[in-house]
Image (cartoon, rainbow, N blue to C red; front, side, top):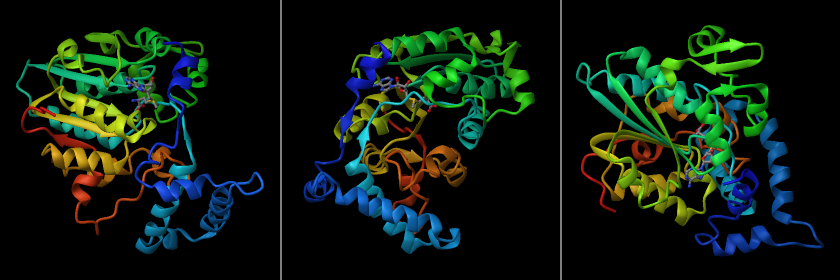
Length: 326
Ligand SMILES: C[S@@+](CC[C@H](N)C(=O)[O-])C[C@H]1O[C@@H](n2cnc3c(N)ncnc32)[C@H](O)[C@@H]1O
């Protein structure tokens, strides 16, 4: 699907308006062509940015921030993004590395990465896993809904233009030593090394497609990062349930960049076991989303251990105990 039509298709005005009908009306209200809600948010943002970080990080401010974030989501126009980075969330990659430690010597590991954008997440996962366990036969299915984006991913050759295409500086989280391990560089062109490009099948598909399970087959690890938050709530929940069906019993699902209420609801409904290891580090592991709360709709709230459901709410990784039928 061409980039422009994908963006238009995914231009969602106010995703969670169904759950807050009165607040939605208030958020949309225009007085003399101006939005009082936007003015209120702008004023709050100015004050918020002047507060000392110890005050901003207090639990009482978190509750107020959560209210502001709800309003931000109601006034926002959600748009699909392609933004991605190499080694985007290091603690999440570290957890993947630890989870594969337990695999039998020489066994096959099946991984699916959904919403893979131009590929940095795919190659980062393969780099971590193949460096730690060169004996494993890793088979990775990478899925994206955009053909143009997928073509870049498959080539694995990156120039400064790629960062422009996805609106993010894809190499900014890599050290020079990591660059040298992952790429063959020629001028301003960096090509992913061949040992990291092996064993990948690229699929032009919608992650919400019910046929996905038949096409990809059962997986030991499924990764769905930073695309569900761009969808309307009901679509995101349906898509998440579809994605979870891919995980074999005993396998792991990594899901981030999704409305936390939706993830918690589906996790509790389907009896997923949150993985406690590195939970806080992974939650805070992608600076671009944590720093944007509460002012952007993709912003991620601070981890709040006072919530009774905090282990499920803030886990990114879940062990799937039985086959997911819903
Ligand atoms: C913001 S990027 C995230 C890339 C990567 N997962 C990461 O976290 O760095 C979102 C990607 O998801 C893709 N996408 C959006 N909706 C999708 C869907 N329904 N099925 C498959 N891919 C989708 C977009 O084309 C885009 O490349």
